[in-house]
View 1 (spheres, rainbow, N blue to C red):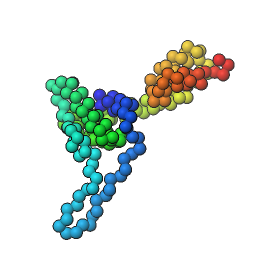
View 2: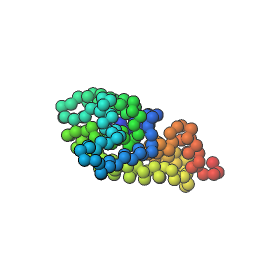
View 3: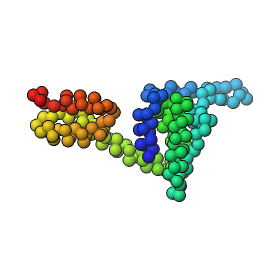
View 4: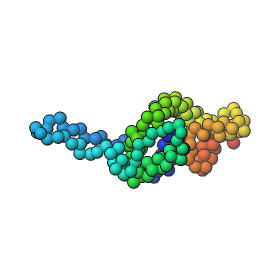
Length: 171
């Protein structure tokens, strides 16, 4: 669910910024006696909590709508603050508690394995050529592999162009 949300957020949020956030200033290690060191730029987690983002604890008895409400509220806060993708992910994970956090840790290990598979299938799609296959076989393989490369063929026009480019010259 979190993976789906994150993918959907990345695709639908026009404010999402892809470069990593600037590094946080390092606190000074030397300060006058009696002066407490204060971080000048607060972490994004502090900002989102001030805007109304809440921690999420999941229970087996929870209503799925509760999770959806939490997610919608959190996305709203990210939109308001124009958080980068890295900040969104970091802050969302920091809001997970108890069972929800353990679920995330399990998901991360599964997703990393799946990501390698998806990356391999995307590469196969990008390298797919008609070659010795029939046009029907090529089309079937093209359509099947295209689901792993949605970011590469984001429109029907791009998909058609990619399909034509993979056909043999004489066609």
